Length: 320
Ligand code: DPM
Image 1 (cartoon, protein in one colour):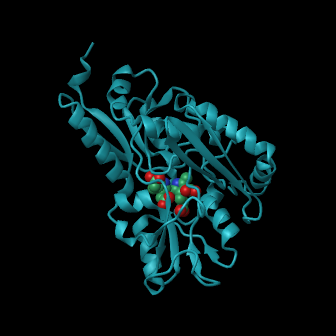
Image 2 (cartoon, helix red, strand yellow; image 1 turned 180 degrees about the vertical axis):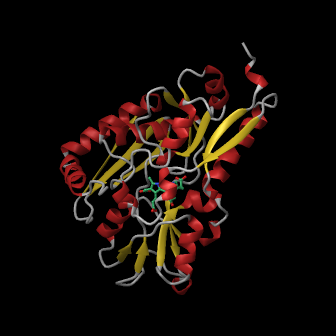
């Protein structure tokens, strides 16, 4: 048998600027911890990268940004893949596992205002202000609290979106704080939206490292990057989403804290128009994070979340 250290570990990544920044961070962390190994990045294009002109909600979500990376691991061409955890479906293909969850950046959403709105917050923007977002989760929650604002789809990478904002196509954008900061656009954040305004997406701000279930060598390597507190929070969030059978494009938001050794998960399901909104919390042991997530999902279903989701699944089926 060839010693594992004799060949470089191949890390699969999307080609987008954000994906590369994240993957190179993981590569550097692995290199720092395992100086005797070599790590190389293999980039590839996913379906989601090719379809930039269609609203995400219309494309569907079954691994849009992850499938090609997974197939490459299953073929043995790469050994691990780095994802924004929020883009990774809650059910992984047979043979692959989530090997590690890294320390979370701020998970909240951010308001990024066009220059003429400097000094405003989401609360002071006047009627008709045009907000760019293509996240149904952000749309439903903001429509609920700010029905006087106007919402418009926006796609493209972060640079493209900011350029559209600066060109006056939108008055403001809602984006993840994490992505903005990682790309050095932290100074564009006008307001970090509190949980009362927007619950974040499941896994937002954390990186998920996926690898083959039977690759004990790689599993041991990547496990050293796991951040236990982030992992417990994200496992609770993912179990919540999995139980609701929601993909990444449903109006489902979460918020987690670990305080005094207890994990509290808050979850929300909203209708697309923001009219109906079901929200509740549950506390439990971080060691039983998934149980907390599953139980909260069942609790929300009793309060009407299933009806809301059934309506959405029936109306918003992918058009292709
Ligand atoms: C998913 C959503 C979005 C991304 C939907 C959601 C935002 C889509 C949009 C599942 N993936 O959040 O409700 O605004 O059009 C994505 C971003 C990041 C990872 C960009 C962003 C960076 C933040 C992170 C796209 N995926 O949300 O601003 O690491 O969590």
